[in-house]
Image (cartoon, rainbow, N blue to C red; front, side, top):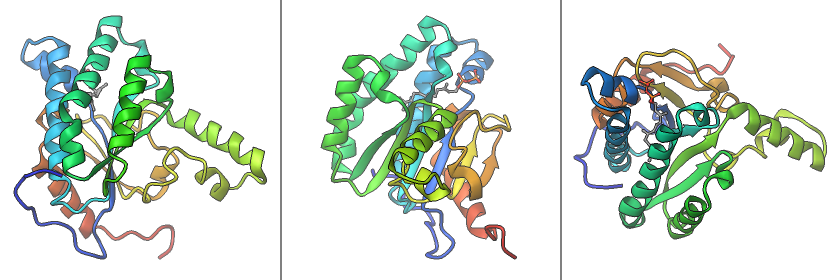
Length: 235
Ligand code: FPP
């Protein structure tokens, strides 16, 4: 994914394969500078672009980003429009680069309920990136409680409702287990993101506001992860 300088990468046994990020703090980044929130979101997209380009040298199999939650509809109409327009522009400007760099796009959440033109763009992007080897999963109109409820209902249609049968119906069923969940901007909560998947994930809360988040920050997080001892409830 791109041409960032090589970083220290992961060690085979301790490296994270799947990292998810709650990208928070665009609004505060803009406010601190006396700028409109929309500019904060624009700079947030640039942070996304930088990070996606850095994922290949970091050897990650999957990066999952919380781009629009099912609760974000409560924001002003202008802000929702800004976010949707950024999404449109981002797909248009970066899709060819994704394809060239082996990025496989995946969308989680109730994304089919977005505007029809965005749904069509996403379907095209999913198709064109389907041969990629490193996954960029983007959560759009996503809420974890709904995802779990939908998965449990589907599991029930096919047989017994068990953790395994629910897991198999989650939007993330084909992604590697979540290793590390990062939230930026100093807030310490999950905001209805990957609640099931985070059961054994390591968590990292950093003060950096999302537009300031750089590949170096992710590399630091991966290095920190590699030093942690994960016991999955055992000793
Ligand atoms: C949180 O900042 C961020 C969001 C609600 C949206 C995240 C979206 C982006 C980074 C841009 C769109 C992404 C793509 C992939 C095109 P906030 O507005 O809640 O910040 P605040 O808490 O400081 O107000």
